[in-house]
Amino acid sequence: MFRFINIFFKLLATNLIILRSQLLDKLINVQIWGFCTLVVTGYIMQASGLSAGFGIFQLAGVIATAGLFECYGSIAKIIMDFAGEQSIGYYLTLPARPGVIILSTACGYACIGTFLSLSMVLLGKIVFYSTFNLASIAWVKLIAITILSNLFYGLLAQAIAAHVGQVSKIGNVWSRFIFPLWFFGGFQFAWTTVFASSKLLGYAILANPIMFIMEGTRACIQGQEGFISWWICMGALGLFTIVTWFVTYNRMQKRLDFV
Image (cartoon, rainbow, N blue to C red; front, side, top):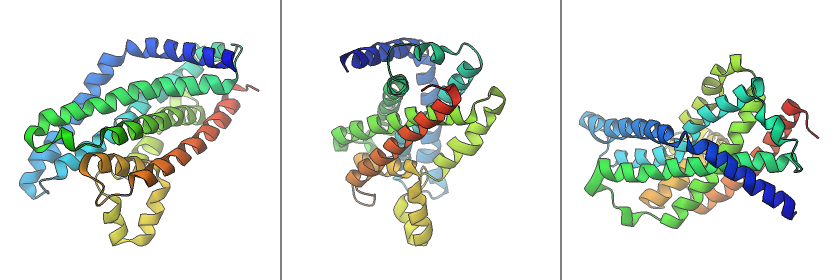
């Protein structure tokens, strides 16, 4: 057990060193996306009658999905590794269970994703300044759901990469996976809004784990009223993460033929 733990942390450190070289570019990219989104929804669209509080509502969505958008680059990198250097094959020769390799990779992505997600809080303060009160944020809850959501994203990236498999099919990643999860995940609407218009659709949309990430993050930023309970969101997201772990392991096992 100690040997596996030791290998896990060494692999995690290796992954972070590799990802660190790309961190500045990732940070710039996510800040540009966040800035454009917040300025448009927080200022420009309000001239067309949008609610004055929609900017903060959208900020919570940006924080919640920064890691999801980062998934696209991670998935492409994993798929290209399958077709090229196959560094994952080298890691699987180490004296550790394949699950240790998969988990260390997911945790590496989770660390970077968590940093990128939380960096959006500072951007929100810069964009909205006096209308965004940092003291009103439930910081412990926000950090907890951000870490768990990015661990989920880290596992999801590997599952999708193993499913897609081929470089020629990387284009399918956005249209078949990332976009539907994001668009029906509550980025532009609250779950109560959907449920009020259609109970059937409201219940169906709970099959999307991003909905719980959105609702839980907004409960931390804007307060619990009007959103699904943070505790329910954490419990549901925990279950989705466990299920995704098994799916990821199964897909990677089929792709890499490890035992």
